[in-house]
Amino acid sequence: MTNRRNFIRYVGAAAVAATAPLSAYAESHSCLRARPIPGTDELLPVIGMGNTGPFNAGDAKASWNVIRMFQKYGSRYIDCGDPGMFTVAELVREHDLKDDVFLGTYFSVGEQTAARAAAGRLLRITGKPALDLMHGYADHALSNWDTFRRFKDDGLTRYIGVARHRKEYYEAMMKLMSTGTVDFVQLNYSLMETEAEERILPMARDLGVAVITNRPFINGAYFDVVRGHELPAWTAEFDCDSWAQFSLKFIVSHPAINCVLTETANPNHAVDNLGAGFGRLPDATMRKRMLKTIRELG
Image 1 (cartoon, rainbow, N blue to C red):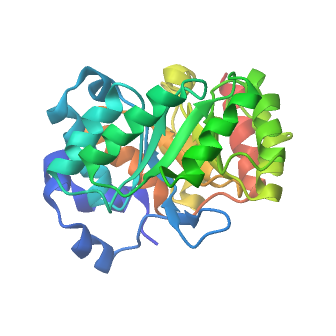
Image 2: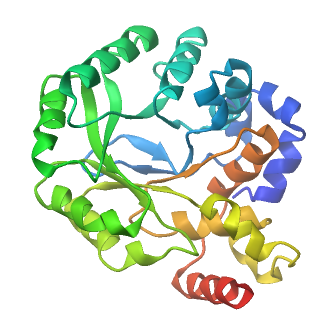
């Protein structure tokens, strides 16, 4: 399979990568790794694009520079909240991507009228027959989640999910999973935040709930730990050539994970992140070694 070093060599600079035809790349090299959404035949590539500053600033040019990179190399998931989801929606319409992107969006569970109106606006802009994934937040009253179930029953969205980025919300998320309320959970999980392994990830796998992860680099704190240190030579055993990929490959090697969200406005960083979706993944023994390495550096 293609490793990340070869991947970057093939795509070259960001400008070249942005114009290279995906079909030609996919024909001659391995495709971006993807996993099925539990209970379906729908595949979701393991590297996704998180909500970025340009989205929320309404910067269409900067947003497209990164979105097109993900599109060219087989990624589909774009995570976007208000107001950034409308920036993304306009780009989806402009570039006719309605069938090529999987949008993860956010709405207030307790504000049914406003959420329905915003969802309808997104559908009109994108041309999608239904939203892909409507997220609510785990701190909303659990009784209010009937609103999202109605949205799904009405065909407004294909999936509903619950999202948060701290372990304090895991109990509420597990309650929603246990009642069959949500199809997706989005949570924090990485080499530096492994608490999700204890209960919520095994539960999601047992119940067939898809898992999206956020904070792969802990808002930059991860790079503070590894900066100035040489990447261990043994990482070549799972086709890893950067510290960014070290973190991302650890995350996606967990069998419960469907997709990890990477946030960047830099096309070169997007290439780096996308490379984690190619090549081999670490096994259980190697994952322990990776954890030990980061803890020793920290």
